[in-house]
Image (cartoon, rainbow, N blue to C red; front, top):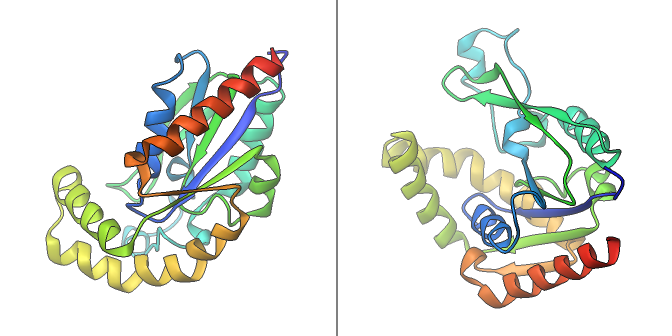
Length: 209
């Protein structure tokens, strides 16, 4: 790939609407143009730990992510090289043996709660976005998602939110807002902000071509 890809970071708290924003932007372009890299795929391999110890993993803490691998993969993509994106097995709480072959594209969207927390990742981004949504909406969205998609109870979701998600958000996620170039309130429902983002991306693509 001769054109250096444009890297867009989409950060924000759990349930803020990061994925909705990313999907809305992707709908404006062809699959050949945009590549999405989710930070959630880059949780650390824990196969060396007993299963009981893996259950104690705090997935909202920066230490949970293998950012060394993520940075390396982004650099490979920027240099025109394909990567094998890892897959995380949430049932076993460790990295799966499976990988997803990925080819570089003109635009790379890096999406995750803590992508603005690591300076190495920030340095690779051309545009930094923070999706800013009120805490009450974020917890409601998380409860609905975890019940419907992950089969969890309301009690377990709320307990996790109080004990890890909320304190980690306040300590690590919220402070990264200051690094954002663009702040999008209310996630995927903010059509004006998404339209502006899509227009900006189109301008950059046209310029690079």
